[in-house]
Image (cartoon, rainbow over all chains, first blue to last red; front, top):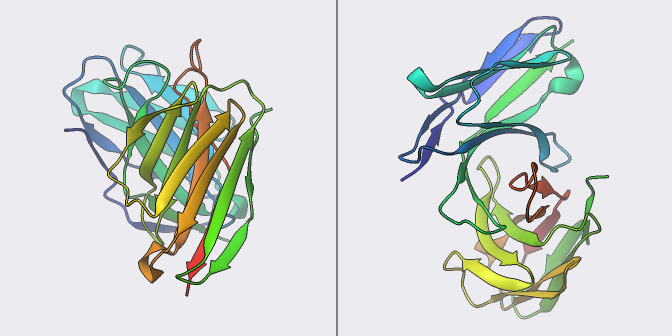
Amino acid sequence: AQKVTQAQTEISVVEKEDVTLDCVYETRDTTYYLFWYKQPPSGELVFLIRRNSFDEQNEISGRYSWNFQKSTSSFNFTITASQVVDSAVYFCALSDTISGGSNYKLTFGKGTLLTVNP
Amino acid sequence: DTEVTQTPKHLVMGMTNKKSLKCEQHMGHRAMYWYKQKAKKPPELMFVYSYEKLSINESVPSRFSPECPNSSLLNLHLHALQPEDSALYLCASSQPSGLAKNIQYFGAGTRLSVL
């Protein structure tokens, strides 16, 4: 069975601090996809990044960066110089490849509530 | 454009009412999803439609009835709900093929309260 663990339930930082959100996953698949989504108080889940199991390159997008390490089954997310607008719940998710076809089942972690204080 | 539109944004209904939630996307996606999300919890998958056919039903009670009338539209019909069904209902869609084929794009959700 697939599992995603986000051990940090809540994190509170002061603006301009760097913050890392941890994600550890379990899967028996050799091909899989990992995702990060952001959910602000408005409720919409906003897609941030997808990474497939064959691509261990780290990625940077503006103030966001992701560190994927298959050896430790981790896919961590770092926000540099955090801002108040980064306050949200962040979900890490793992895609089930068994579904096949055009639909995929996401297994979500429990989420990390990030609060950035001014 | 990665927009999934859900209506209504808020819905209050009694346990004997019948109501429907609507989800629309115009991105050419052929997979559409319904999720239920309780407060402080991750989304839970309810249904998946692939090419307008129901492909996954996660053992959802029959008081929830999904419908996919065409490739752009997904409905969730509600009947005889219970107070514990109060939640945020999220719709998502994804491409059937291509590089972005398993990226699910979500709507803003419908906040449902059952009295």
